[in-house]
Image (cartoon, rainbow, N blue to C red; front, side, top):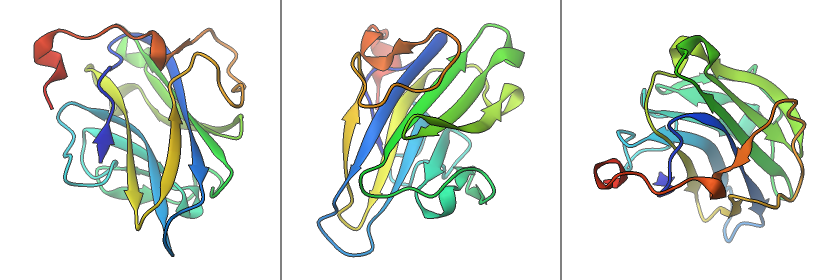
Length: 164
């Protein structure tokens, strides 16, 4: 897993990744969010600290549990958006993913998303290639009804929050 350097600790934030042609055969992608405690030597979605939207079957993955009945499968040319709402009211926490601007539905909410700092994260398999876009200009404007900020607006965290 690779994880961004700036994380969300409160607010409504969005980022996207465009899936590009791979450099090898049978490449796959997982795109999502991870806390600082997420295992970097494992794929995003492997543990309780990371959440993924998987290209195969459009599955969502968290704690190594795959749910295939989530969204649409995606591949080369698709733009995958990641929206996260973190609130001081745990019941308001929400995570959803977008395929080419279309909301794939609520992936995780409330108790599934404990307080913490969440970083954009992804895993690439067998020479998969993506182009990450933290904003402020997005390739595809997501269909989000509430205000959100691009991840590019995040401020650096305290030094202890930036440890890998």
